[in-house]
Image (cartoon, rainbow, N blue to C red):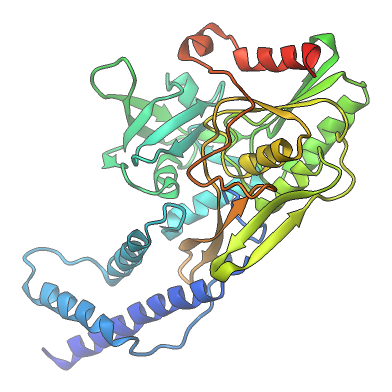
Length: 405
């Protein structure tokens, strides 16, 4: 092996060891999406000094040198090797929330905090069996227009199987520039074979809040995501609704996938005047209480919160706090069960590492991760209901406010 090759290998070794060191240092100093994401934006990872690293990495280099000298075929680039090593470490953690996203897809995912993105316009989640489910195609958006339905399972994006990917990895493949085409291979209940759906992406501006007065002086407000616009838009809607002195209020968190942890505290505080929103439990037994903030606009009006399987993370924080406090009742279906907090770190090449740093618990110390929130009144929403335009969950909420509150 000539000296040039040795130099290149040495530089590659230092580069990979720096990346691994960065990972170790990042984990050591994590403090504090989905809620959750912490409110802080993705931050640069601290740069560690280059070094030889632990002796255990010698086996890695033994294996790599053998591959390099003997493999019949094209070798991956050192960037691909590095990314593969990082993803391998994450698989060993056994945590779906901790994820690595390459620079191109990380830039796409950062659009979430603005309340708009370029993609197909559908709420999705990853099931425990590793399959991606369409929770709800947004009305009038490309997915719905192409015939995508609630409950569809996405098996492939273009030619890439996505089973057992992280949610972030799968979503980053589905999203893309407006005007481009994506092909989804879909498995649908009642249809024997998977089939392909072609969708043209577009810019999707999320309507974060929807509000109106229903019959019988019942106020209704829906929050679709806990993003940067959520608190301001919800406050505006509640102020307008409360000015009409409603007999009751329905807060719809169905198919809301979550968002910022701090936003969940601010939203919950619109309905509670005291107490806890949640307790965050981190590494080493460290706990952080998140109390209710003062100044809520809807702390006394009779309240019903709607949830379903698409209500995740920050939605579950709000629902759990309202249920534990006795402030209102929950109607609908068991929520998703996403009770962990991820802190995003932007690495030196623009890629992103999102690390699970804590789990959150309701005021009565109930864990949500993997369990979800069970509503006080369970009402199923069937595919037949959706196709017929019926909403038995909303109807039951109205009935409760008029007859049982």
